[in-house]
Length: 175
Image 1 (cartoon, rainbow, N blue to C red):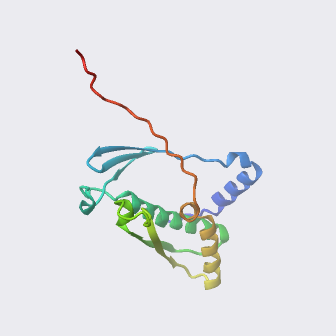
Image 2: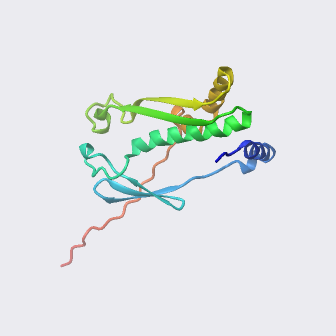
Image 3: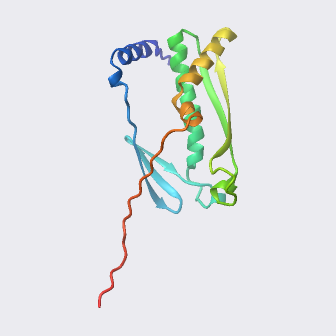
């Protein structure tokens, strides 16, 4: 099955260029902890399970949140490569991505305030199956790296505001 995204890219690019007020998109997820460290996350019409490995207190029934970050980067790179290869007229027969991240658990477990809780480093390798010349594939890589949303999120701080709603179930004393 072959997909050509050049027309989609050009139509969307032109529409957003002429009507920038239409460019804003919002995404939303809802998550609810079920049992132990297992959560159910709702994304549009999809349910995604989240858990921790047994070594970190979970039941190992699903990937953990930091693994989903790696999955998001890998799949976003693949999508962005496909879209821009077609848009730039660069033949691309296949793309795959391997991503690895290193976390120092002393940050998560508050052992050392000098150690961040998240990834210390993420290393990814993109494999392209393409007959295109190396200079075209390098131009494609530069374009993808400049426009991949998840890569941008990871490379540049994003303002995050976390609110807190408290539901109290305290027993009331009678007497």
